[in-house]
Image (cartoon, rainbow, N blue to C red; front, side, top):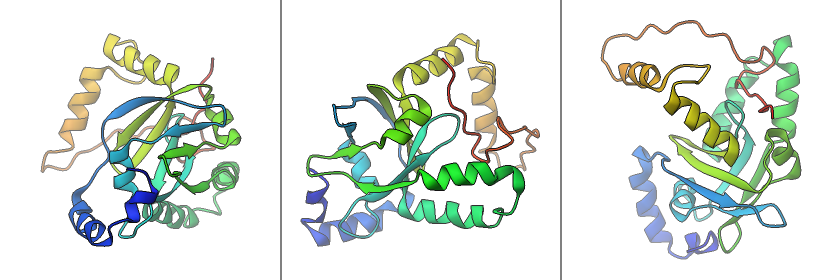
Length: 201
């Protein structure tokens, strides 16, 4: 079923919308870009982008840690409101310019393909293969080599950030009822509230 077919049954999608209150994106797949810079978005992810209407419209922009992100329209509206509250902070000005000037509102075509603008592909070093990863309220797009390297470093315990065991322990601690006191972590870039970094080769 393609994006256009999402609107073929309004009653069905009204019911889906009612069931999606607890929806989250998960799973991952490898996709190849064609000669026009397009890739096929998995069907279940397309379903997750449809918000109470018959079209799966979304926004592609910069994400955390060196990826691109596909944001729901409702999610990007919340991000915009948060950023507006801090738009006069000088150290974020260059980031805001980069983030908002490269936001790309779009939708998939009749066969579920999404076009990646050249500017966004260049920003994080996407060439041919990407990993499409569902991460809670957004879909992350990673250059496959970067995703594979990050995963291998975590599994091998050679990641500069934290070991997988330690990261997992601290993440699951968030599930406790008791208040979790986190360490103060400096952003990877003082210019970037999303900690966006272009991966070095």
